[in-house]
Length: 285
Image 1: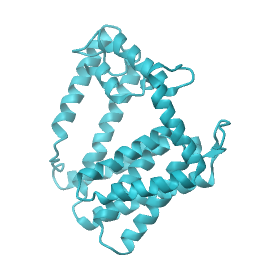
Image 2: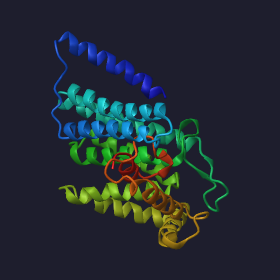
Image 3: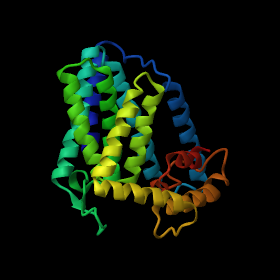
């Protein structure tokens, strides 16, 4: 992955600059202690699980834990480097724009949608990136964009972010990702607990307009609602949510309930379980 190589370079520069100053910057964050505890528990559970033959591939387990540590290091580097509001605002604009670039690429290079009725094509990411993965990334960009629109003063910056967010939202809807739709609703509802509650109202108005004007979006919304309603008792072969329910039940009974305290170790459960909470419970108890 390109971003892994880039981060190695960024982290190396950050580390050597810190060493020139005599010490690494202190990270004051409420997530530091939980992260260290979870990492230590993960190592212990993996060692125990490997001894019991529950971790099929130790190299893969090491890779997963290294990636999780990398994500924390990214947070540490950013949180200890940005020291001015101007820098933070610039990075916000760059990040929102990056989502727009990905969105524009997907709109200009749509893929077939596996023969679905109205949805002849759907937006996907570069190099065939899964449309659900792209939708998750776009939701994060849209959330940051909405926050920036609410927080930035009126002017060119706010207009720029507004236009970027509109384009990104359009691409998200054209991914026809049911997961993306549900994530977007959850992200927008967060604003209901802030002083920017108007964002929720504006989003509802836009959603209703798209619902009535865009037939493919309307069809996919109906399909999503039907999928969720039938999921508890539907055929796993034809309902992806039902298939997930069965997979979660299988992992819960076959992994978590057998080792509810210590867990089975990182790598004992495949990422295809598609549920981060259940995955971590099976890994570390």
